[in-house]
Image 1 (cartoon, rainbow, N blue to C red):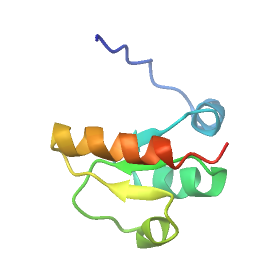
Image 2: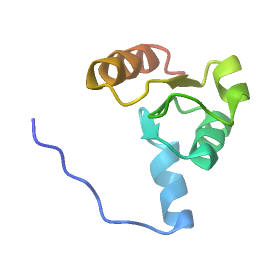
Image 3: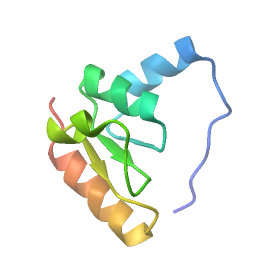
Image 4: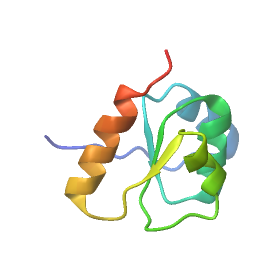
Length: 83
């Protein structure tokens, strides 16, 4: 399946995209915080995070950069989505 990346957007254009996403993949600490507040599941593409509280509350999971682990993390977080 081919993926399509959208062009960069400004912060106030990005927030509604985040808020309406089923899951967000990021390496940004700020985005980890925003998704936690918005109640949107997050998968962090890093081995560690400066936002451990997002993991503690279950809104975020670390996946690193391994595609298999990322796929598993996305599945886990989609299963935890609060509708």
